[in-house]
Structures are given as C-alpha cells and as structure tokens.
Image 1 (cartoon, one colour):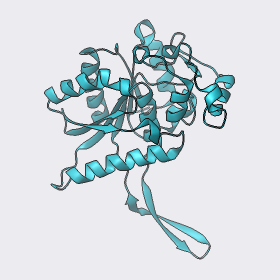
Image 2 (tube, helix red, strand yellow; image 1 turned 30 degrees about the vertical axis):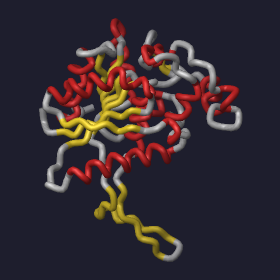
Image 3 (cartoon, one colour; image 1 turned 90 degrees about the horizontal axis):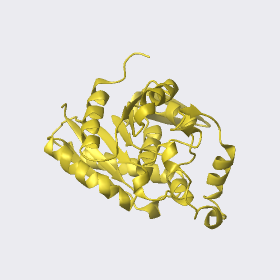
Image 4 (spheres, rainbow, N blue to C red; image 1 turned 30 degrees about the horizontal axis):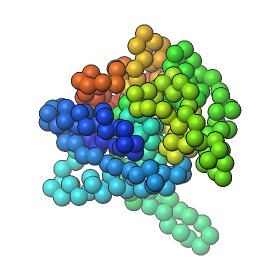
Length: 259
C-alpha cells in the first residue's frame, strides 16, 4: 500500500466500537494511524468546528513532516462522524494569496497561502441525507425533514431535537450506534441532503454502505451526483470493514477515473 497517514475521526463515543478494532487492523497492515477526537461540545452546526478540525489535522501533519516526507492524508470516520468528515471534505480548499488594494481585493492564484490538507475521505455508513433512501435507491426531496433539522439549531432545539430519527439506517447511517437523534445530526451537518453534499466534495471520496442487494443501484445513483465518489458495500463489522477500508485507500491513491 502506498504511504499514507490515516486519521480516524471520532465525534461520538459509540464510534469506538468500530474505530478501536479498525485502528488495530490498519496498524497490522503497516498503515500509519492517528485518532482525531472532537468533543460534541465543540460542534454547533456551523463551519467553525469543521475548520477547527481541519486545523487540528493540519497541525498533526506539519508536526510529522519535519523529515520532508509527503505521505497522503486520508480521513476515515463512521456514522455521524462520517457525515462530519464529508463536511470537512467540502471545506478543505486551497487558499490563494490575496492582496488588499484600497477598496478592492486582488487574488494571486499562482501563490498558495494555504494548501488543502486532505488527500481523500472514507465515510463509513454516513447519514447521506433525507433526500436519499437506501432501501429504494431513489432521490427525492423531504422539505419537512430539512425544516425540522434547521429548528434543531435554534431556540427550539430542545423541543425538536430530543426525538430519534426514524429509520436512520434507511439513509445510510449505521444503526448499531444506537438511536440517531435530531440534535446529534444538527450538530454535525449544516444540511442533510445528498444532492447538495456529493457535488460539493473536492477530493476522491469513498462511501462505504451496507447496501446488500441494492448495492449496484445505490452506486449508480450516488456516483451520478459526483465523479469524485466511489461506493463500496460492506457490513459495519470487523474484519469486513477493515478489508474494504484498505481497498478504499488504494482507490483514493489511484484517483477517480475519467467521467
């Protein structure tokens, strides 16, 4: 396997049920593995928590690059943390130098002030969105769900956020994590829409879903939304998810094919 720094992202205490054995499996495969812990208290449904997490990853990468090595950086997460990882994917962009001249701003695209830090993302059973059904592999808007999710970030959060989302696994999320509450989802996503998320991804991204008999249909639907996405099918259990994660790392190194 090509040299890579693998970062396992944890924003939910129940993530450890998969991340702990997965980390051991990846280390046994000679991979460099680090854990990034994000406290739920740091999540508020805004970009700031995601940007802070990217800064944390960037600092860890810079601290290990004193030798001048340039290993790829791949972020791996499961469940709601995987949804948060997709958000990081969308926000991790190259920042060119900008110069302020009087009342105008000039961009210098040839001068990179801050490069992106991630090479790719592996999202294990993320919450795909209210507009996608894993059981039917169909896209369709659910405006009431989006409206309710927005209410979970404001003064009405206590009223709207306590209940569990019914059939969260139908939207891709690993059900063995326990109930997925509206408030938990609101902290990790600005919106829950696969039609908005996937086209905004900036780098090779692998979605690992327990799609079973609908795997082929799900792959067609999701890959149509973005040429940067690959879909792999696996139960969320070891060692299966360990093997598919290594396959996902290899796919990211090879890069998406022509679209």
